[in-house]
Length: 187
Image (cartoon, helix red, strand yellow):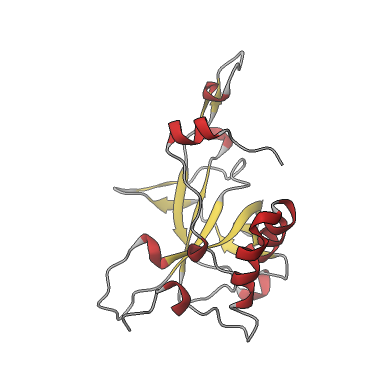
């Protein structure tokens, strides 16, 4: 599997997702919001002729959404709402058509309702990768994280131990233990 060279990673300031920020199993919950991030095609341009990676101009879109009704998800994918309008930092606006967002991340944002805690990025967990959009239902579908983790473990055998440790944390049942990452340590 080819990767991005170390010099490019350093130059762009890229970092990996910490293992404790990855949910070992995606289980959509109605008491959480979901942050979806991607690069819609209609907001991206490619300078011609493209000579290197920097000839591509991307504008990212991120938004908070709710899960679709539970029966819309299956063993492979999590279904999330994708409305035609959304709220950015300052106003309500039309959301871009999500073509091109495939491969973007989906993060579960733990609800702080009734909590005295402040929100922090450490309270979010990676649960899937966007794969498709149903325009009639206005839903995005994301491949569940457990399938991505198996691919990572297969293609990068040096990470098998990390994946197995994550997977072992949920084998006892449906609930994802949050205490392992300190998310509920102060409750």
